[in-house]
Image 1: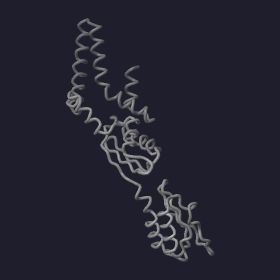
Image 2: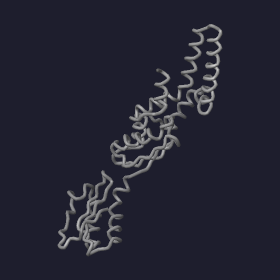
Image 3: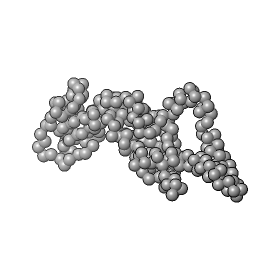
Image 4: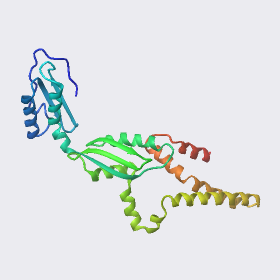
Length: 239
């Protein structure tokens, strides 16, 4: 809330639809606040933008009275705002938090979204949104479209495909590490034994298994407009 310099002869501000783009109960709250708070010159409630703007004469009122009026006028805004917290199966990688910041900026541009807090490392997404402009289901669809999947969806998929439920963290990481080690060792032995084709096959398997998470993190970085060290390492290995 910003207070301008005191007005010597304040002129009452608008109290109708052009000052408060909301419904009749909202307009009545504006009129009541203007009448009950001496020195309050103008009040504007932007429900869609989630803002309350007040102009008042500091010589005729106190900050406490203005704050009380602001809390009263914030009612229509607060009633429409809701916070949704969901667990997410986010991309992995050394720069995952920079991807999270980019993801936040993109999701904030979605209509009705007021605030976004995401942690890819912690796997938590918190969204404050206007129920009058969007819904939780719509937000989930938007999150999936941006390449981040809510955990509930993954659990539903795992229930249908049982072997995928078993092959998850940390088992998958252990398995890929073991495959990378065995394939690398096998490729080295095959190369020394004069079996170049077998050696190349085993080295390719080791490369694919070892680079699985790096490729995922690199792809996520590209989608979110950031450069991940994992992406650079994968490109270097390809070279």
